[in-house]
Image (cartoon, rainbow, N blue to C red; front, side):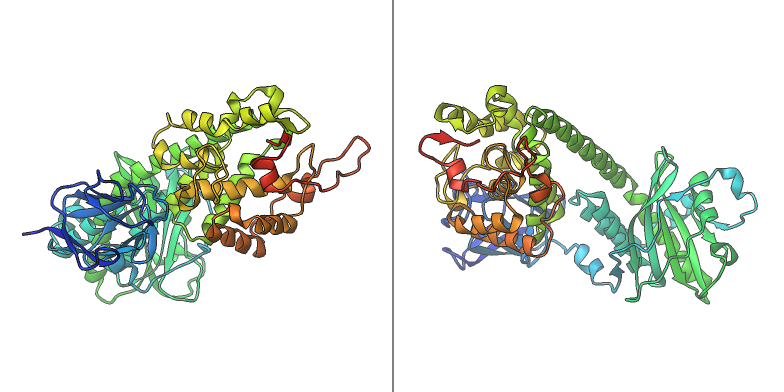
Length: 535
């Protein structure tokens, strides 16, 4: 019996059924793919489907036009029965005969509202254990909780569902939200929940995610002594009503549950639940929630480690880029601004967090190849000669060679190599045309062009942001139309405004007079002006 099938619902081979027998399965135009699609909007190597146990995972291979599941652009996501998978103009229906595993979709359906503002003034300072001597909460036996809960069929399903989902969640914040959603289903009596990350170095609890069952946002009733006690003892508690707050606005039970891994607290989950006449039911809900939290602890530890490594890597890249830009006063801060403009465009395109993370790295690194360009060219205050311009044009290739040695470089290298490509094919280094230009290259390219116009150069002065947008619209043939529209929307909403650009970054001549705006067009700077070249 076939375990999974792709049914072509729209495209050149509509109606065709494709059995997925051996994994991984790759889809694209190239003849070496498992499934070859004759669709000009599909990349040569567009996507890959992997299998982990009973899970099917779809991974985009940095395709030109992206991979979509049920209308959402994805980078790495679980495929579920009857999902709609779109690659280019070809749409598939994914059908599996495996027993259905209900994941995030069912959890999201539970009527809980994620507050944009967590409503918590954090971080919360945690005191020493001695301060809790007079605090007498009801303590929960964590080992007993886990042993009882794991025998419950509902608990096993909830634990397995969330854990399976976390396998493909690459961000601590997203995993935190998913955990609260699942707890809310296990605990129908829960009205408010908040997850805090524990920082042992600063002894602070940092609010990460919060949920409320009511649309009207209410303040949380947080107990300092309860948090102190749970961190010190690594044991969940039910907070005494008179200890929760100096003024009770409503009768509710407050529970604080720890997430502990290798005897070290990782997070605390604060829960406010409606009081029940049957305390046994509430205790059972708490037991299931604690079992779920404990099962997720190893994955959360790994996500926290990744979070720290990401911060370290971005910091390292920023330091390296800053050292390169220090060689050229006129481009100081350029890569940071390009990364911010790229993020603004990404928000308008509604790209997910993982794609934005990779785009950020790509934008920060886009000019890293200038480390291989002689200082005499980088620091030249006048227009470059034809020979100098040809040497400057090598920096995308040098940069891509440098970042190719970084972990997972294939996921973000395109913005480094291809940010000087043009939609009409007149760019460099590869002269790619239209959608053959990788997605990141298109975004970073327009952000780079915009910053070159508004930040000013010694030989050109600066442009106002509105004038720069108008200039880019005049040269629309050089840019992806959809990305250009996204940039215009970001500008119109004020998102593109940075203190590091436009008039605040104007260059003055020795007399103190601002240089007149005579910025050459993007085509003049980056394609083939007649006698002299601009970097």
